[in-house]
Length: 124
Image (cartoon, rainbow, N blue to C red; front, side):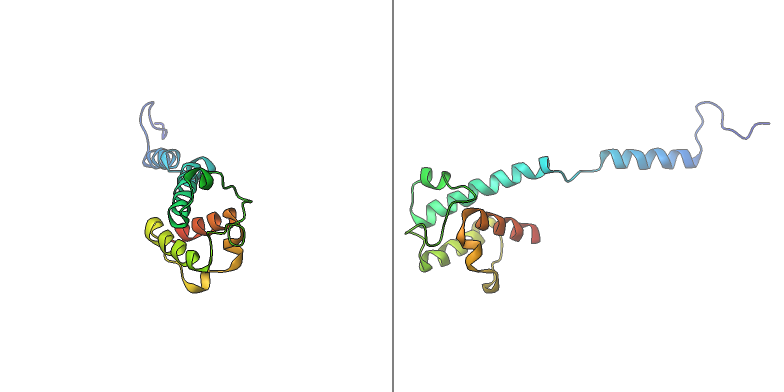
């Protein structure tokens, strides 16, 4: 008498392995492709916030790139506007910005501000 299952029969171990394989194959993956739409949405939203708070044209905000200077480069972004910008970011991005989080580096360039916002969103 054979101890091997007949063709078509599966042992509990085989069933468990099949289930684990299916879970692994169907598990969500965290890839750069998944993050790209979120980053693009954040980029668009942050530029919209900047345009609204600073009162600049949407085209000027849309032209910002990672190296674009902000504080000290945009005359509209003075110390009072920084407070308004951070408050609006908190409201519209659903984040909390502590006083200790704010430094000159994050406001130096658009890329720095975008990276800061992404970090705050990721921290939740």
